[in-house]
Image 1 (spheres, rainbow, N blue to C red):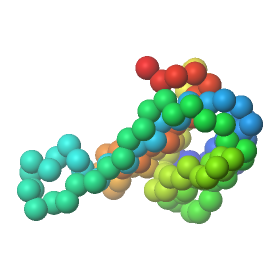
Image 2 (image 1 turned 120 degrees about the horizontal axis):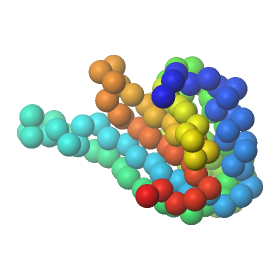
Image 3 (image 1 turned 180 degrees about the horizontal axis):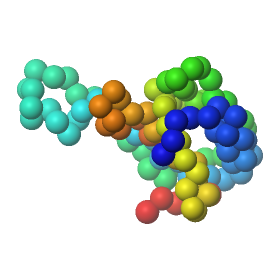
Image 4 (image 1 turned 135 degrees about the vertical axis):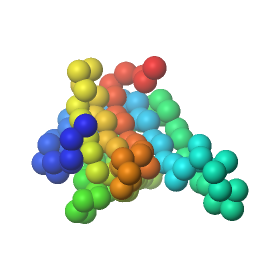
Amino acid sequence: MKPIDRTGVQQAIDSFAQQDVYLHLETTNGAYATHNDESFFSAGAYIRNAFVQYEHGKIAGTDPYRVGLKLEIGWIYAEGLTHYEIDNQGRLLLAGLDFTGKLAVALEISPFPFE
């Protein structure tokens, strides 16, 4: 993955608009490491292979970035994004990495289900 280029990410978001896509959205603040500090409050969210069609989407902010996808009935939103890639399967993969390089948030868009 490489640091987000707003123009490249916006073009990729636009390329998936108005068509059926699969989304992966995940957040974590260390849910897998609470055994190290029992007083630490862990929270996260995870959805995989949500089948949606968004009207339009937008990347905004300055590192870290946020992405919003406008659906007919609401929004999908992720913030804290720092890196991206378009993989060899044509999927847009966005990630927010913390200062130690660990994943904090992921938003991925694909024309077919994630395995």
